[in-house]
Image (tube, one colour):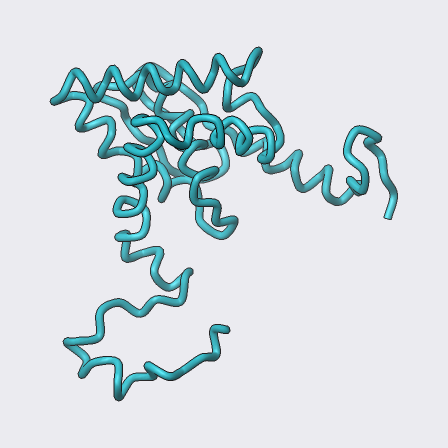
Length: 177
C-alpha cells in the first residue's frame, strides 16, 4: 500500500482515486434545481435556495450515512422541508438560517466544501441540540426510511401482517447478524 498524501496517514492511491471519483459525482446547482452529475436525477426547489437543498442532501447523508444508498433517496427525503418552507415562513427561516450557520462554522467553502466526513460530523456535533438539527433529523427518520425502494437494501421485507405475520415468516431468522 503506497501512501501518497502525508496529511492523512494510510491514504492509498486506490483510496485517493475512490474519493476523487466520488467527488466527481457532484451536485450542480442550476436556477431553482439541484442536479446530480453522477446519477440521472434532479430536484427542483420551490421555496428554499438550491444551494440550501444541496447542503441539506449532504447533511442528510452525514446524519444517516449509508454508502449503498444513492443521493436521490436523500433528496427525496429532504424534499418535505422545501415543501413546508413554501407554506411556513418560520420553517423556511429555520432551515435557511441553520444552513447559513453550518456554512459559517465550516469556514471557506462552506459545509459542502469540507472534504472529510469527520470534519462535517464534528460540526454536526456542535449543533445536534438545536431546533434546526432536530427538525432535519426527525424528518429524515420518516422521509428516508419510509421509501419502499430502499427496503431491500436494508434487508427489510415490509410489513408482514398481510402475509401471515412474522411467526411463520422467519421472526427467529438471525442470518442478518
